[in-house]
Amino acid sequence: MPIPSAGELLVRVKASSLNARDLLIANGRYSTAVPPGRIPLSDGAGIVEAVGDGVSRFRVGDRVVGTFHPAWLYGPFREWGELYGVQRDGWLTDYIAVDEQSVVAVPEHLSYEEAATLPCAALTAWSAVSGVGAGDSLLVQGSGGVSVFALQFARVAGVSVLATTSSAEKARRLRALGACDIVDYVSTPEWGARVRALTGGRGTDLVVEIGGAGTISQSIAAVADGGLISLVGNLASGGGMDLTQFFRRGATLRTITVGSRSDFEQMNRVISRHRLRPVVDRVFPFNETPDAFSHFEKGSRFGKVVISH
Picture 1 (cartoon, rainbow, N blue to C red):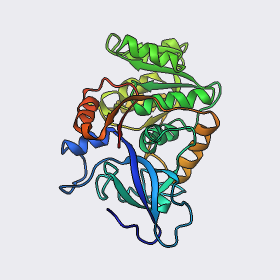
Picture 2: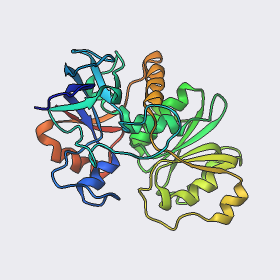
Picture 3: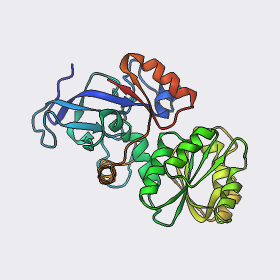
Picture 4: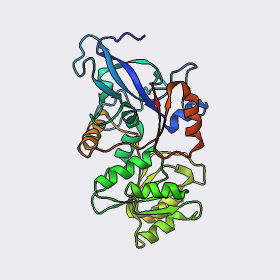
């Protein structure tokens, strides 16, 4: 049982969720060395059980959710710092002691399981769609956590959303969430050209890029001249970027590093105002955590995979 130091909270973890980085860590393929025995998972939510000396932001009984970057409170991104599951023990545990500055309040209408999906995927999506508004168009890739959150945030802002997928059932669910057009990337490998055709030859104002090297060429084909590509992942192997095509497009490529605590709080205000609910693919009990990882690895999920504590 951790003992909270001055300025810390003791949180009883109620739920945690999986991200692509967690699978890389578990499989020993993460870009940074992870010490043996490190407790995994960057995302979790729970209830404050005790507080250390000097704590003023929260009290016993408050519902809180962790931030992905424990030390990035506000302002521009400066460094990666220490992260859960790598330099710090993560949220796949019964209790965790965290700095009171490293958590935010859970939106009142969300369950712990829903709140646990927010720190990485939701905030990444929130940052990724920044810069578009009513009347603009957006392309999301697939139906993972970031893409589904991006679709939800974009629709709230009045943005027209197109999506790629390989499943008729997923296409149906993406349309139900508000996607106006769907492109099957298996039957249409050159899906960038198809996206341009669906947008009258213009392309989308913003592309949320998940695949990285394996999909960036199609994203460049899909984005409008002078548009924006938000790079949030590098999950697909491939040939990478054609710099000449990118140069001619006149687009901007920016990397997304999740977001600060201030960004998280702003996002939560919008989630609360619009009563948005995260899309949860499946909830596994704590003692079935290996099954949760296996399910996540299969890649057939729609939304987030959650572990209930």
